[in-house]
Picture 1 (tube, rainbow, N blue to C red):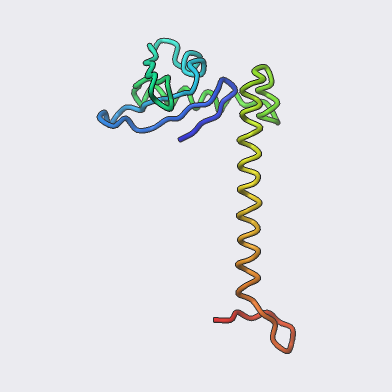
Picture 2 (cartoon, rainbow, N blue to C red):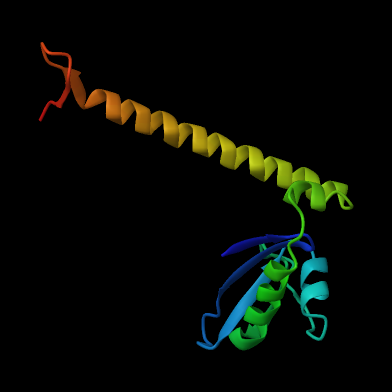
Length: 128
């Protein structure tokens, strides 16, 4: 699961060997440092997510709930403006997902138009 917070971006996945644990990964250490300050961050130079911790699910869930409960902003991107580089990355993600939305809507429009024709009375019918 990808999670974007005002503290940074996280990828949280099931730990491969420990069923009651997550592996919390990040591109930069700061979101892990801020959310789980008591954990030593493992740094893996060759990994796509260089910074990570292994942590029990019981320790992750309450922190994420607290993050959700602390949402007081009406614009997530604007709430992240203190870190200009992170905010720029968020705008790129927003743009990518907006374009995804437009493509899905266009495909849905094409699908609905392709399956419907008008009969002599002008009412739509499906050609099957």
